[in-house]
Image (cartoon, rainbow, N blue to C red; front, side):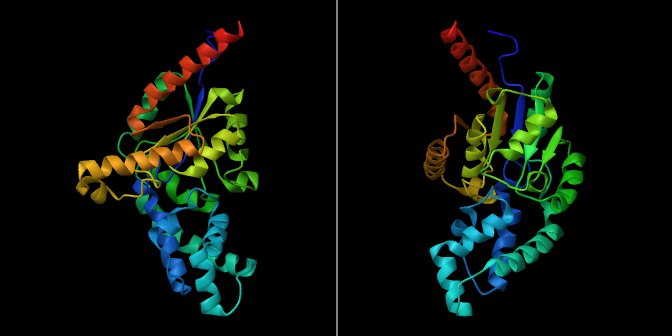
Length: 272
């Protein structure tokens, strides 16, 4: 195998992947903001578009059957872009107040990132948060021992997931190409789409993920059989979104990357 034909860059998501177990901060704030507007959505409805840029997420919530019908009943008309902007401003202000409290690195993140760096990999990140929100997240994560080499928000590209452009910007800043030398790691369906749309590998994480949808307390209390069933359902959703691998926790990532390196080696041998 060519020494250079291997994974060089890992691009992590933030909430639900490296910080904020279960991506609880944005989920909680979306619930507050929509309730204040007279719309009461379920946790499942709120979480379904998670990972999108936040205005896109709001549009998805307003467009779902429940959101659309509740808005029509509450206001006697369809929602419009002015409504999206108002909800977004309320969301942004509220999230900015609480997000730092949820930005401690999740269990296993610091050790895993250290191991990846020791193996020579670069560490990038993309997020649905904007720059202003990340000003709250980055110092708290750094104080806990996690600082990626590169942070790209939708502000940098003008468009968020599932487009590949934030990931491409990480590649540009880190000077890593081709895309098959990059792995996107996340906890939502749109994280998987982001990676695949860029031509990179995508890996979904189960424990702590928004897609699994459990708080730490719910995870610990759930009977083993039910937890295994929930994880299998989540695994299938990742795979349906194009995930190349699904791992139980972030601690499994170094071994997963070695597996991808072996795939690259086999592909190289087939072309010889």
